Structure formats: C-alpha cells, structure tokens
Length: 189
Length: 189
Image 1 (cartoon, rainbow over the protein chains, first blue to last red):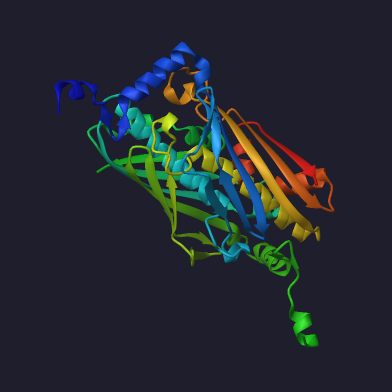
Image 2 (image 1 turned 180 degrees about the vertical axis):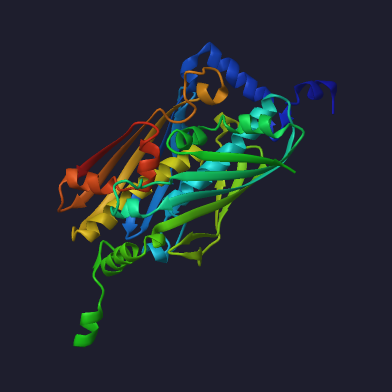
C-alpha cells in the first residue's frame, strides 16, 4: 500500500464509513433540503390474510433514489389461529422487526460517529396485544400493542446508559415510543 | 357434493373463514384470556447497516404457538445514500409495509364479518422523514416520520367511508396514528 492510498483509506468503524457520515452531516448543514426524505411502499391484496409489498425507491438527498437490489418484495400473512395461512410474518411482527433493527442500526451508527467500537449486538423484542381491540369487542382496549419490551445484549467498550442513548436516536423507536410504552434494556456482555 | 357436505362447508368471504371468525369472537367472549397475544422477534447485528430478524412463534389463544412455515428471516439494510449496502429494505420502510398490509387485512377481515365482498385492494404509502432528527442536528425535528399518507384503491360494493372505517380496526394503524398524522384515503375502483 502506498502512502497516498493510506491517506485515502476511509475511517470505517462498526462497518460504517465515518468519513462519509460526517460528509453527510456537513452537506445537510450547508443545504438542509438534503435531509428531507420520503420513503414509499406499494401493497397488493392477494386474498384472505395474504398481501404483498413492493419497495422500489424513495426520495432523499434531493434526488429520486432507486433500490439497486430491489424492488424488495415482502409478504404479510397471519397464522392459522388468526385465520390465516401462516405463509409469512404478520404486520405487527414486522413492527417488532423494524423496531429491533432500527435500534441496532442507530446504536452502531451513532457509536461509530463517536469513535466507540461495538463488537456485537443481539436483541429480543416482545409486544403485548389484546385482540379484543381489533375484534371490536371492547372500545377501551387499544387495537395495537399496549406495551413493547426490548432486551439488547451488546459487546462494547461503552457503558449501557450511553449505548441506550445512542440506540434511541432510532426513527422507529421515535414512532412507536410516542404511541405506547417501549421499555428498552441493555445488557453488556 | 352430498347434502351433508354442503351443510358443513364453511362460509368463506374475501378468503376469510367467517364461521371460524365468529367462533373466535364467541370463544373470546367466554374466556377473555384467549385475546391476550404476545408477538416476538429476535434480531442479530451482521455489521454496519445490516441486521437480521428471526420470527419463530408467539403466544396467543392461551398457548405457545410456533410458525409452522417459520422461522421467518427478515433483513434490514440501508441504501448507499444512508451509508449502507442496500441489501434489503430499511426499518422505516418496514413500518410502511406493516401499515399498508395491516390496513388491508383489517379491511377484508371486518368486511367479511359483515358479509361485504371485497374484490381487490391495492395501496401506496409514503412517509416523510427529516433526517436532521436522526442525525441529532435539530432537537425540534422528530426522528421518525412526521406524516404518513396512505392511498387505497378498493373494488367492493361498500362505500369508501365504510371501507375506511373497517381498515381502521388495524393494530398497526393504531400504533402509528397515535404517534403521528396518518392520512388514509380510499378510492373506489
């Protein structure tokens, strides 16, 4: 490796290109319109419990963006006990998937920006839902989750409180936690 | 087909077994504990923007339930403009997927319970997100979506207002709409 190539090697922390991250932040400071994103999905009912989403692109950084590896095709189904075929996860399970993943990505990105190495992250999420709300049997029971708990196991030099504060930059955490209690606990391993 | 088989044929509307739906409602009325569900997901960071969720089972109808076709494996990634590899949809896109699918399933299930035929449903969802919130550049900007719009195209005998009220039994609509404005419009086709 030449000296020139060494100088150009990006700073990669937690698999995140930190130079590019700070370039993005600088670009947004110069032109805040870069920060306006619009994400999109289209969905088609396939019959009964089954429907399919296509995710092809979005708008961001002042441009229409196409998912080069897309369109991403994602199915919803319901298990037999909820009168479905059980062909795929159901919508509320996808919310848990989105929440766990977003907390993880937010933690490792924000850790990278602060020079904090993260070695591993795993998590379990559970959401309690009383289907009397969905069934219309009790107006006092909400239709969605009434509480969600997230347990994260993290291997990192940072302490649990710091890791939790970084995870909570998560957009999906913002969406869900402003609707219902989301209890996040971090265990250092 | 014998007379006996005719008598036993379940009432299927919109691909939903309406007899089983009313049996479920009756069972919940007799024993409300049947309605207590807990959905679950586990997630593992794969490096950088990439993490993977496994969804194996849940608790419902007073039993531990296993997804017979699972575990369902679902990946999160981020597009290159958000410093990822673009290998899969990102967490906020999964929220849009969950919302569109849940509105659709809720509409067709509740229509079936009322004897309303639905012939087709398709939808587009868009969520506006200002990444200054995620980046920590402005405390007054929320990290998640600030508005979501859903346009549904439905072929059915029922009118648009009725279809909208049925869709809004959706658990994911409940979760998201109690956090931020979700504008749902229904077009009869």
